[in-house]
Image (cartoon, rainbow, N blue to C red):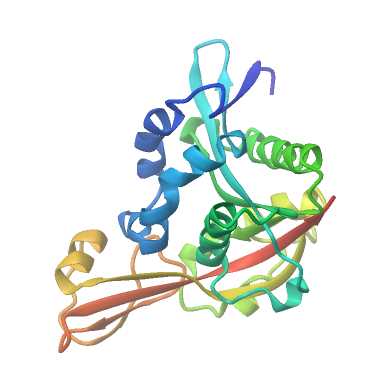
Length: 250
């Protein structure tokens, strides 16, 4: 990769949320934009933790190459005991710690979005390395990541405990995101089975998934890691997403 990149955080660019929101929304399935914990707290990342939110900018054309979001929080238990509510827990805990003036001791990645035509150029590794640099500068002990394995969407009925052990012929991890983390020293610790809970009405889910749900039951939906559950009698749908907790010691 020969392009020259600038790293700009939200302290240096106060309107970064407005600049990046359209790209972030395009990157995720619609239902992923309807997590209640995220909807309440996402903008607080830029108000409370601007130095932990940054972009990579291609200096040749001023194009956003990557968007990175992270958060500091306090956590003192074993990572083996990390809450099953993974991603939601991390975001809520970081915000609550800030409000309660509790000193953080670790940092967590929350989201990394790569502009599509920059995929496959090693950008994700650079973003993770910059997150590690920030954590070191803040004297935090670990960088953790509630990873959403990107290829799992093609295998929604495969148990995630089985999926995380899949390897390519070269012995590296099958999943691209898990492979990137492992390549720079990240260790898979556990699966957090309830990392995001996204409820909605039947109408919501038919809109979000762009499909009909004729009967009560479980359905595979494009972009989901596991099936969603539809209950026509109560007019509800629920998606409970697992994440893979990866820990980087610093």
